[in-house]
Amino acid sequence: MTRTGDAADLVGDLLADLAAERAQLRAIVDTIESPAWFAATPSPGWSVRDQIAHLAFFDQMAVLAVADPTQFSLERAAALADTSAYGIEHLRRVPARAPALLTERADAADSFHAAVHSVPANSRVPWYGPHMSLASMVSARLMEHWAHGHDVAAALGVQREPTDRLRHVATLAVRARGYGYVVRDREPSSVPVRVELTAPSGESWTYGPPDAPDRISGGAADFCLVLVRRRHPDDTELTITGAAAREWLEIGQAYAGQPGAGPARR
Image (tube, rainbow, N blue to C red; front, side, top):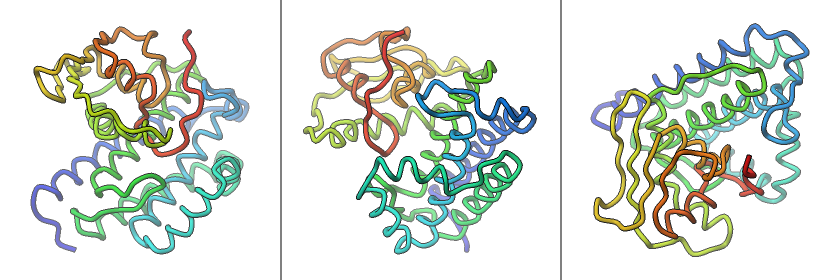
């Protein structure tokens, strides 16, 4: 399929960054010994194996969402009917052991890239939360790999250096601000918030009206860790001004799914 225009360029750039994010995680897990696969991660009840299984499974579901939205709608309905059961069951639908699991994960990644290239770049794609653009779907897969990769690295004592690929995560988190309210059956805040982030490279990334009284500023990694619910806002160096900004960071989440308790203060 011919892919032209800005949307195709954006999706192509996102796919390249997603591939780099996958490669960074693969370099961490490809050579670990068997006992480390069952090491506990910062996500309660989840091992390293569970984190990788989660990524492999939802890459498979992303393929289905892009390539066969009708069939995916059945999967989505099953998930929403009993989110707790689905949360347990999905980890059992991929291989339990490392070699086969890693192979399935790699195959799912390749299939996702192929599926994205097979549809128009301006497509809308269903997911477990709201439908999204194809570019946002790729961003969401990158966000998931970064967030779960954070958990895996922490469990294995590996220090990961943040990259400017975080811009995709930050942008997704800003666009998903209202979702944290919706998933809690609350009316999204209409108060504008200015976000001023410093990228790992030193670049400045800004979102929202420059004159908004409510503001969030600081490092992009801190902002992203908070909005993938890996870190409490008060355990970061973010500067938070205003009740709406504070509320966003306390309930916001960049991913689809139930809110859960969120990270406790360290």
